[in-house]
Length: 267
Ligand code: SAM
Image 1 (cartoon, rainbow, N blue to C red):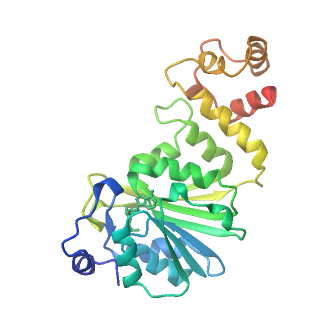
Image 2 (image 1 turned 180 degrees about the vertical axis):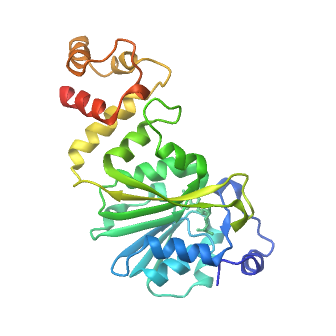
């Protein structure tokens, strides 16, 4: 079993967990088993981001048809390949943000204990990939989990919250104590899952998400200020009139429906 402290310490030897890659290894096999069982489907391949020593990979293989894992750190890549011999496992030594996901044509599941420093770009990449992702299950810092389910008007409400609301039903699967990691991080974590709630329409989404990100570009500024680099004054007036917006409204005060109405006007 890879998810235990004795194994982790013995294979790491002189190596130190690398903070710059957000390395905190899972050392509680029961928790890892529960996460994997809930995240996978035996008829589907699972993509894992940041397999590290393979604590989660081992359990994903138990519950999936096959696993493709993307690891940025050569040390981890080598330890993983020497720790797990399974022909259903493919490991890519690459930054997931550079990975070419167009190789996937089939339905997939995603499961990862995400490196905290790059959580948001990884989630954007997955959400905007256009892949047929039947379920995405990720472990993230508790505060990121809160941000993903942030409500209109709250400090945490962002372009990511809108994308998530538009595409997925989000579920908090479990809270995770910092004691199940080695080394132990300074914050608690949570496992959340995303299940698609609509048919994808990629060309619509591309324009819509770009608009939403632009509206949040300068959070402290009014919506008007963020829109004025994108559209002429007539279009902006039409947006305010059609959508019944207050003059000084900011992006974080607008609901998903408001953004959809704005997009209808500018499309
Ligand atoms: N999955 C292992 C576990 O749960 O024990 C390790 C999780 S650790 C929080 C994050 C892992 O992601 C590390 O192995 C780290 O090297 C890897 N990683 C960090 N940035 C990455 C990136 N941009 N692309 C792929 N892997 C990355």
